Image (cartoon, helix red, strand yellow):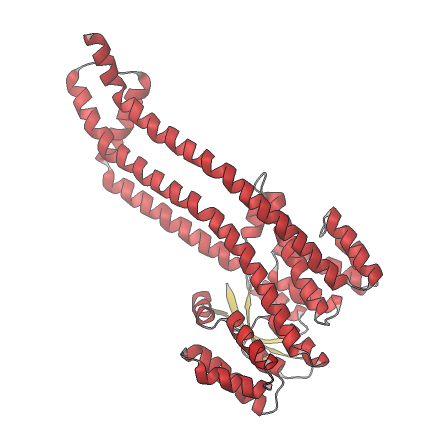
Length: 394
């Protein structure tokens, strides 16, 4: 669920944050991890926040702002140009708020931090780091590349699940139609013939008659199951539990863990390349990982704060793979830890993409074969008594 939090910064400035958390203590812990003091905390409708984000595209805003900055415009001129061409009322309001804050003397990082429902903590962090190096275009370019790569991985996962989901839905509807309409019709005909049927055919007819007599109840149960599934999916999506659930599935758990680590490496690499310290970067990333990984990351951060190398802390708390660990050690020796984290993410992104493709090529035929056997078995059992009758006549 989402929480709207009002908190004080170290210099006693009031900020309003919108964060994702499982419950109130978790939300408070997330805010305090950012070195903020909670003033008030209340539950906010997640759907409302998501719809607003859907109207305002942060990636598109970053791309357009980057293009104008690289063309030689200053920040205020670039924002004025974006406001003039914008037709969406929400996007226009967001940018007008930004430019008003900047004209009042606020830095861009402070201006975006005052609209956390549109600008996530990672974006705020890289903008704040870019202000120290006066290299905002480079920071925007890093964020665009980061978000584009995350979206690419996400789209591959979604594409791999759409076709099996459609197949499963169609098979369920066909099976339901056969069992509630077709099988009861055959059962009535076979009862009038007075002939005995095989055990499996008789069992199918019994189930068909039962479902045919309670079609309304079956429809209510199916609708309830669909509604429960939708609720469960949305609930776990809001609370970020899919990574934890996927890790428990045999054969998929390790791949889900590697995907999450890949995202962690990519985020940390982007922040480190942007000039943010390793401890602060780990602190900023904690809110974007699962609860289990968040706990491990917090412990690893404590180790790094005590002077231990990042590679040692990550290995100690199971946040590495053999290849990533070697890259981390190389990065520490060469002073390019951010680059090595990004390369680790690239390596595992490619490996995961190939695994998803292979899994789809194997799983889809298996699912089609299962559906064919299920529906074909029902049809064969329906016609078995007819075949027996034809054989006896011969």
